[in-house]
Amino acid sequence: MALLAELKWIEPDLRVLDDSPAELLVLSAFADERPLSGLTGLVDWRLAGALSRWRMSGFSTGELGERVLYPAGRRLSHPRLLFLGLGRRAEYRSDRALALAEEVLDAAHGLGVSSITSGLFHLDALATPLERTGPKLVHMFRSAPGLTHIAFAAEDGAARLVKDGIHFFGR
Image (cartoon, rainbow, N blue to C red):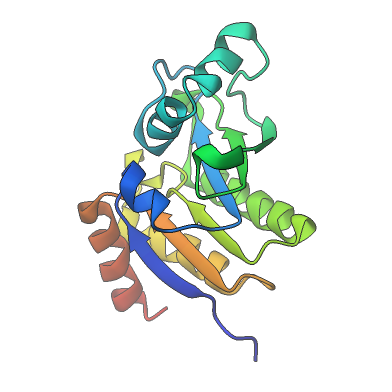
């Protein structure tokens, strides 16, 4: 039986992010999201607007299927950043979010990383209850081969809903 990765919950805050280093930071944004918000917006600010400039120049669009791997340098406690396009907000569903999470896990495995920091793939913004979808996401990450440490950046209320769902569903 494979060991489950260590899981911790962190606030989406730059100081907390600095104190929680990992090998890969996963960020995402919708194609129609302006300005960038949440964890992605905070990291954009830390990177002096680099992610926003990508959007303005057309290098990154946020369209579904878009992936950008970026060497973060010394501005972050995460040496690599993986940016995901989520597509249009109105077309986003929980099954798409979980499929994107699977793609992230495949990318992490391919990169050989053992520690990841990620948001909740905007599951907390969908109509499907987070208590149902969040535990699936956590289970996927915790049981992924090669991952030893995972930090999910989520507001306290969202983290509590996922934890309650994990307890309820017994995962």
